[in-house]
Image (tube, rainbow, N blue to C red):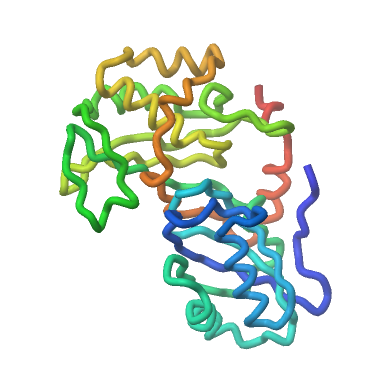
Length: 278
């Protein structure tokens, strides 16, 4: 794994940026040829604002169609850009309406958006039982025609918590580990009766949340027993792609970081091989 740049080069300062976006019309976070991506639009806006090519590092790359209310990035900008008080306002004037900057502050020493993060939090929303979705909510709620038993889902999902190899729930990527620490995976119904999953982990591998959601739905509708999910996990049997739920129901809601004095320790821990814990 490449060692991260812990602090900006001489003549630059590091910014910590909190942003939100509607992922509907994006091909995900990461830049891709001939595709509209969040990263490219953010970097273009920053570069226009500071009149210098700016690169960003993101806490967690989201897939095409996935939303965010509090994504975190860092960017190194020229030192002469001392007044960052109006950065958020100016960036929002440049950006399209499906991206919004929540805040821009100067990053503390040793801050790295990706490697110093403690955990990422997501929610996933489902309208089950053929429930009608409001036209204004159709881009961030997935639908399911059968009713789902929330108690069965929570019982199955509780078994998935802790340090685990989630190979059964991740799309394979060369050189990437599938070991993660899943800290929260629970379901509730909101005031409108929509099912909402709250999911938190130190990090997520590719399509992990949508795979887990799809498997939980299989249990919730009675297709498989509660033990089915943990058996998949333990046997590392890849869950069928047909169970992967759509991106639009998924939203990154926050990224947590340690106190400033612990940032460097957290980076060292993150860069350690997760598979050494097993």
